[in-house]
Image 1 (cartoon, rainbow, N blue to C red):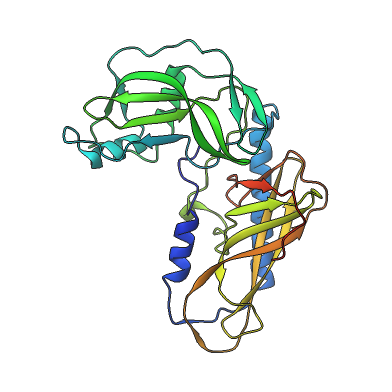
Image 2: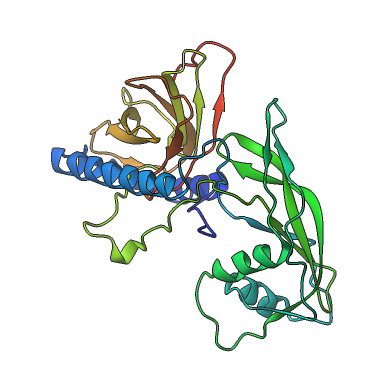
Length: 309
């Protein structure tokens, strides 16, 4: 699983608000829209392949990191900078063998209701996943020494919101910081690795990124949220937004298009949380909302009527 899934909401607003004196952007060209559509189809194909590789078992998909840090201070006996870099590089050694047997099945539960029984991986397998999820090599890093593992539950972000998930908590030598890894095993969909920006052909879409979404009770009205302009397109510096859904049997990609007011003025870059609605061709069902990198996005389900954009 990819360790990072792009910017979080705070980072989106940091980018939007951090720019000032920007001249209003030009409208999207038809060529750019066609390119975004091609990338959406490619993302759907990659997700379809990921589903096929796991025999199509739906219901549980992690969003973002599968390993979390517990504790804020690495302490005086360990170099915190080295420790975090070694973690991201997957550099771990063990003081003694970890349990190789898988524990009994566990449960994944969601606060708003709903649960599912899942197989639980062994501590050895969880550590192997942490090693494999390397963000890049670090030949000068000192590996982290794992001194023990304890099975517990912890909260992780999923495509259905925050869930309580079986997890292995790993103790590390010379620090009170612990690493917690989601321990759900079995044939569940694991997102494909994102394509590095500099290796994408054609270049990756640089438009707005959907950060969250809500599905209306009708099952077809999807409201997506993103960081955008503060004002609407009827005013100078304002922008209106529309959305297009590109669908497959297993996933949905939503492309957000901006329609800026083209009045030639300088605009202060004060951003806002904006939304756009799209009607799907068929009910969302058990599909997954993904982005143009074939990475999953958290989607909640509303109990009320669709909210306006």
